[in-house]
Amino acid sequence: MNAAHPEKTSIIDTDWWSVGTVTIGITVFAIAQGLTYPLISLLLAAREISDTMIGFNAAAFMLGLGTSVLIVPSLSRHLRAGQVIVAGLLGAAISLGGFAATDNLAAWFLLRFALGFCVNAIYVFGEAWLNAATADAVRGRVSGVYSAGMATGFVIGPLAIPLFGIESGLAFAACAVLVSFVAFGLALLSKRARVEPEKPAISDLPRFARSAPMLVFLVVAFGFIDASVLSLSPVHLTGAGASAALAATFLAVMHIGMIVAQPLLGMLLDRMDRWRVATACLASTGLIFFLLTFVPITGWLIWVFATLGGAAFLGIYTSALAILGQEHSGRGLTAGAAAFSLAYATGGVIGPVVTGPLISVVPGATFIPVAIIGLCGAAVVWLKR
Image (cartoon, rainbow, N blue to C red; front, side):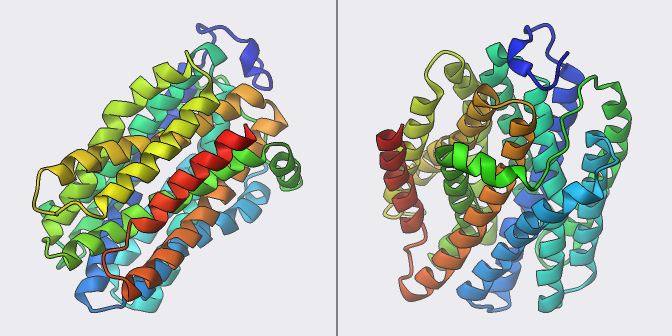
């Protein structure tokens, strides 16, 4: 199988060992991120840390993610993609253990940065690997399963909060142990993979950005929405009188919607114009989160909108991933995966930094920036494409 030209392969030639390795890796990463986003926000809020500082702390993860785009390629030049992913997971486990060992705020900024730095290996190498191993005929469905695995991890992560509580570091420690065990399992599984993506080169990033600006924009928008919703919706809900357990359950329900919807969206992506699907996901996200601003936290509607909102906003990324593999190959594919990571980090830094200070001034406005990005982003993509 020629990794540089995945569009020429048949369905049978799809390297399912590679697909499985990457999907399991992203699922475990999502468990760690799904736990840390709400748990750290709730812990900092309980210590009466300001919403602005909580937003900056969430941005530290994205800053680590973006920084690693510039450094990880040179560090991993002589490693296989599977080895890089395993190393990233082990680094993430060490960072999670650090959260369990200390409650120093400055240390948490450094640990959050380190966590983002380590998991970037899964983004850059994993997604280039996934697309290189996948035939275009099933690219949408594979992207949907990959995103569903990510969403599954995001469900498991928040559910650790009611199980272990927020008073001790048990949730962080348990997640660190899980990530470590899976890292060793993936080290064995990745040896069966037949496909190896090309190594990313920093010099390819500007070229990709110039050739695919709207694709980069999709991922920036997704990063903005993802980081804002995951890090600040628990603060939004508890500020309105909800318990920490209800806030965590809100995120879990949101990600259940993602799990159910992404494989179905993947089938749609294999049958329709993928840009139209991406535009619909942006517009739906904007509308749903605008309505969530006015939905009472005690009613049943909040769970309906949580389910639909999660399905819609993860669909933005699922669509972008399928479009990347459809329109790019070889070095363009690996440059695109690296650009996705940097774009996601950029949006993820801007989202909490903008939204945190906003809700300090206008309580209850948590989802307004997300609604604006979704609706205006849909208009921009529709006009440009």
